[in-house]
Length: 462
Image (tube, rainbow, N blue to C red; front, side, top):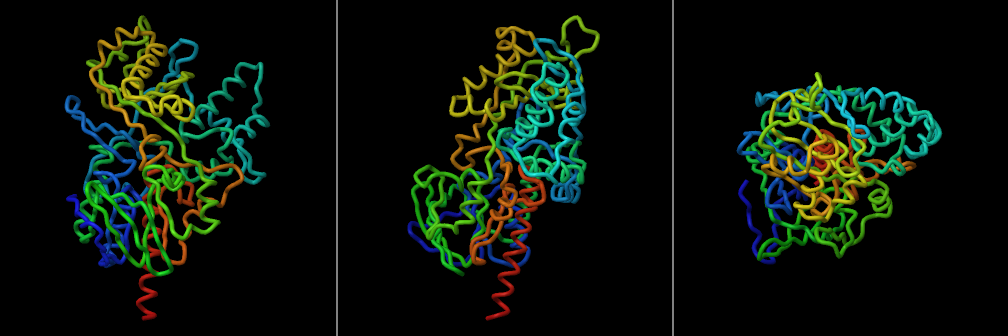
């Protein structure tokens, strides 16, 4: 979408609502507000829209490469309905799960082992961290089976949720599991062109509803009083003020948590109410580094060497590796692409390092897991795609999770302030879908309805 420039120190007073951030939440909210007949301006710091959805196209494989969100978990209406209307094809993730344990590769039933532990969680009891729960229900043991289940459960929670097991709350995990069951979240899908298909749908909806989108526009300050907001913004070679009666903040949680002197931070004047600041502190931003490697061929299809059962139909590879514990393929498509996932402490080791270092560690991880030499893997490697979401000033993390003992934090984070400042994004979802694209979209639509109601009420009173 073409960028509309803000003249130096101008004031844009045409918008009835300004949306800060053009990720899934901001785009869905802006489309809904535009459809409701409101004049909407979207301000996006990056040169592109999509936020933590960032799809590239691999020219050799003619396939999407996701640097951010990749899977559609289950069949949430927020994603499936627009895809169906546009008749966009989808494909279910399918294939074998493999594990690499102490240098041995074998098919494994990883998820059923983890399920047996997770199903013991109870949100009817006092909330506690997942690690505290494990210490009670599945403590460290000399029994190999019990110890194995404990270790895999920790790896699953830290991997899937990008969470610190000693911080993430049992009540939050249970709520998420229930929400996932309702939409068949145990199944995963991809759209034909990745999440770019969904972003294209939003882009068209914004154009159809005359929503103005200004990219490369960083919001630095939000000066507000009930019924009036002025945003201090800047872009390449320009600066200005954008004003509106209402503003919707959809930036990632990590940006709200940033210190005022850090790049990408937003300063509120006056400060946000204490309960809002507490909520921002009491939701946690998870950490992930992911890498997609393109090889000359699907070399893993013939592994393990000398075995009758090979990894030709591999979907996921789970391991105890310290750097990239999880890998997956594009199964059922047979493409020479492998995706490496480094969550939590693995991400902390990699964040801030250059792409060459991340790629090197990814290759060394595959060397340890697959038994091939680094030289063999280097010779097969053609290209690497990497994005560091922790070091990205307009993200500052991957996605959010709930802290033990802070069950109401998402609700407080989502609450509007004086019917003037509104908040959306996956971190504000209160239905158990934090950390998901459909959760972000739902939060955008929920907030759009709140704003439209407030606007109609003001009109009726005038």
